[in-house]
Image 1: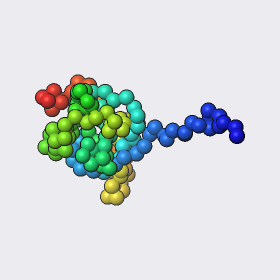
Image 2: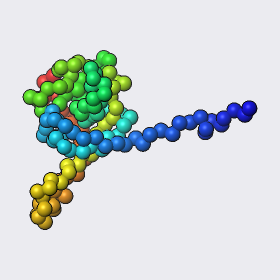
Image 3: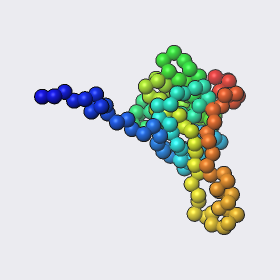
Length: 144
C-alpha cells in the first residue's frame, strides 16, 4: 500500500482570526459590554497588548485582559477597570498555553434607538477602532 504524501498529512490550519464578544465591565474604558472583537489567534503577545485567554481555573471560559508583565511561567494580566477584578490579582500568572491570541480590532454594534441620520453617522465614526497596546503603561500597570 502506498504511503500518503506529505501534503496529504498536513492538517489544514484554522483561520488565524476570529470574533469574540465582550461581557462584563473589566476592560472599561477600552472595551465595553457587548463590544465585538477581532482576535488574531496565535499572534505574538507583548507587554500592554489586549489578549484573549482561557481562565486558569475554568478553562471553558474565555477572558479578555491586558498583558501587563511577563513573569516566570507566563503572563501577569490585568483588566483596565481597577474595580472589576477577575485578573491575575485573583488567579496569579497565566501560563503561556492558556493565552490564545491578541485583540486587533473592536466593533461596537449599533443600538436599535440609533435611527436618525446624525446617530447613524456618529455610530459609524466611532463603532470600529483598532485596539492598541498600552506600551507607555497606565498607572495601574506600573503600580503592580
